[in-house]
Image 1 (cartoon, rainbow, N blue to C red):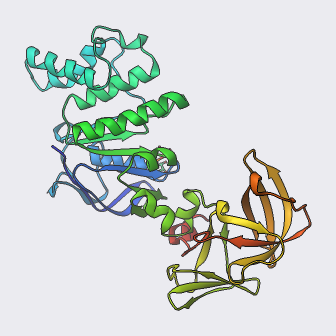
Image 2 (image 1 turned 90 degrees about the horizontal axis):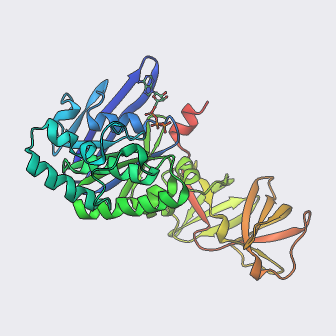
Length: 364
Ligand SMILES: Nc1ncnc2c1ncn2[C@@H]1O[C@H](COP(=O)(O)OP(=O)(O)OP(=O)(O)O)[C@@H](O)[C@H]1O
């Protein structure tokens, strides 16, 4: 049975280090939820608090609205798959998977049944007698998953479980997580620094940074409406432009850059301090006439051939730098470094974002 999780204003300090600061979060029962962030952002600390392996300095953790802050890990209805897997090396696959059930006092016949069905669930039917030391990395991953799943946890916690696997296995195990989530119906919480993993698996995710949550939402929300420039960069919109000003005009936003006006139809109002996150694949270079209100003058600073597209490095009239990915097949004559060009921005090429308070205040 799936269980909901609430993190209520949690702070965790280690000496002078604030690993988590005022974190609030709700994870619905049965969701596949991902904590995404770079190294040191506090993801593992938060997962440990959910699993009961650590306690917050202040704040509470609730499962199905019950306070579990002081409940030890072994009494919680959650199981964790750690990054290092922590398999018992001297035990067979079957004994590894059966261990938790044995500790709980489940009778041998019931135990064997559950171990067999869980091994089948992770595609390891018939592996019970094998020595865990002789398994491949992917198989060891599956044993670790089976060991957690056999307990039928309402919450499964996964701490960077794909680290150390090669790309093919990562893909395979990623698909497996999706499948297991559907089959078990449990609440899954995944910790990762891998954006692709987070985007492909999550119902919703949180982007963490320096012990705080920058944004929570469905994967598509982060592209359509990044909460700030930090989030925009994190999901791949690495160039951020600083307009002279942003104005509202009807239902649209108008950005003024180097004296030229760009109309961003329907773009949201992010206030005076707004920045513009750029989608490099939605910019084209125009010869001759460009539509007013959707183009800017620039100079080619350099270019690199990338196979299917050219990566153009451009400089705007006010000196700001910008990259644009221009599909090779659409090229007629390629502008050379030093050439003046006009940049045409397709719908959604520029997304207004406010600056991140966390990044601004704490990056220094
Ligand atoms: N037991 C501890 N003692 C002291 N500092 C700690 C401890 N655990 C975590 N920290 C610090 O808290 C911060 C957050 O660490 P955490 O492991 O949660 O980050 P993370 O996002 O999971 O990073 P990674 O991806 O590298 O595991 C870091 O600055 C870390 O050094």
